[in-house]
Image (cartoon, rainbow, N blue to C red; front, side):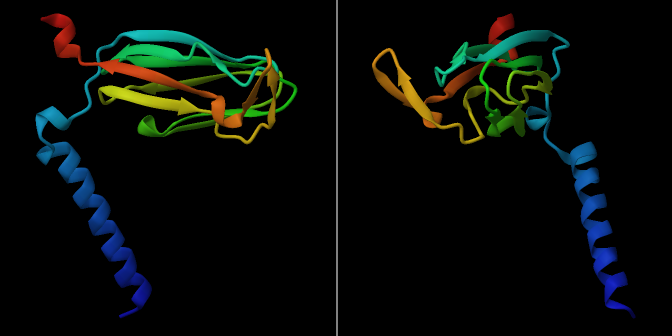
Length: 145
C-alpha cells in the first residue's frame, strides 16, 4: 500500500475525531458561549506616540467584538491578541476592521506585532514594546446574577 494513502488516512481520522469530539463529547462548560451582543470598539495607534488608545477594553465572554483599527502613523503597526488568535497588520495611515468572539474570560494582553521603532514622547523614550494594552473579559454568569 502506498505510504501517502496511509498518511492521508491517518490525517482524515484525526480530523474526523476532532470534529466528533467538539460536536458530541466536549463538556458544556468548555463550549464557546455566544451572547449575541456586539461591541464596536475603535483602537487607534496614535501618531508618533507608540501607544494604543484605549489601552483597556472591557467585554463579556461570548460577545462579538468588532475592532476598528486606525493607524495614524506613517509606518505600519500590528495588533495581536494571542488568546483569540488575532494577528493583524495595520498599514500606515489606514483603517481596518477585525471581528472575533471572546470565547474565554480573564485578562489578556493586546500588543503591537510589527516592529515599529522608537522615539521620545513628552521627554520619555517610548518604543514598540510600550504598545501594549489589556482586554478584560468577564463571565456572562456573573453579569446575570
